Amino acid sequence: MKDNLLLKVSNLDAGYGAIQVLWDINLEVKQKEVVCVIGANGAGKSTLLKNIVGIIPSFKGEIFYSDNNITKMASPERIKMGLGFAPEGRHLFFGLTVEDNLLMGAFQRKYDKSLKEDLDFVYTLFKPLKGYRKKLAGNLSGGEQQMCAIGRALMSRPKLLIIDELSLGLAPVVVDDLIDILAKLRKERGISILLVEQDVKVALDIADRGYVLEAGAVSIHDTTDKLAKNEHIKTAYLGIA
Ligand code: ATP
Image 1 (cartoon, helix red, strand yellow):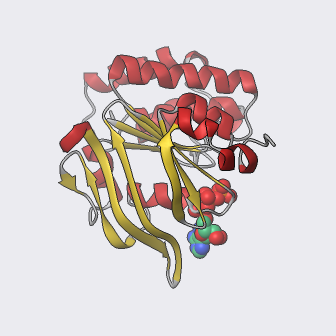
Image 2: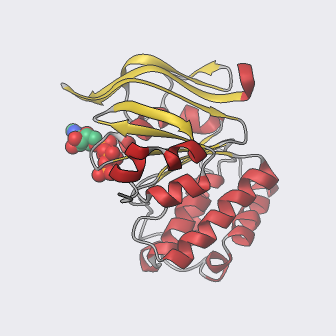
């Protein structure tokens, strides 16, 4: 796609049955870019991510990923093409081990040596998971569960990693570790990241650009440097009077 675009969402309307949640959304993610979506509870952030990943269909508009129109594609096809998703609440299989959860992320791949390499890569990235590979995911701490959810998403070898609520419920020190890991993924693997983050300060620190969702529509989008100086963002989202 033009201008190094990896993802382009055009004029997207979406919702649940008769309820429209998203209104005329336009959003782009470039290669190796980190983009955040911020907004109040119920603004439609998760709905947008679920739409991009194909978990819920759109009413109108189009989604392009790496030169392909993926609007009508089912979720597994989108994952196969290079989208990785770590959902809100992590949605791990609590009755399975950490390693089996990670392998679930590779369910569309052949069981070959590249799978072992990717498991090793995830264990290098998230060191605590290696010691817990045989532990049930349901017995992990919140931070470890988030590591496992992101690790599972990485097992499909995504070019675009989509994370819904990176820091929710996690201690600041764990969030700092996750932020370092995301920076490493971008730098060393060239992975782009689209994330929804309720902690606006964290979101603006991590991302290059951001979109503000208000009542299901994009109200502002800009570089995070400019968003951090925006008076509306400062008062409404950063608590700075
Ligand atoms: P939060 O920060 O609280 O997670 P959000 O910005 O991610 O909020 P969404 O979860 O996308 O917001 O919800 C947007 C709207 O869609 C809300 O009004 C919500 O009640 C509604 N909604 C979400 N999921 C469903 C569903 N499965 N069926 C019907 N309405 C839904």
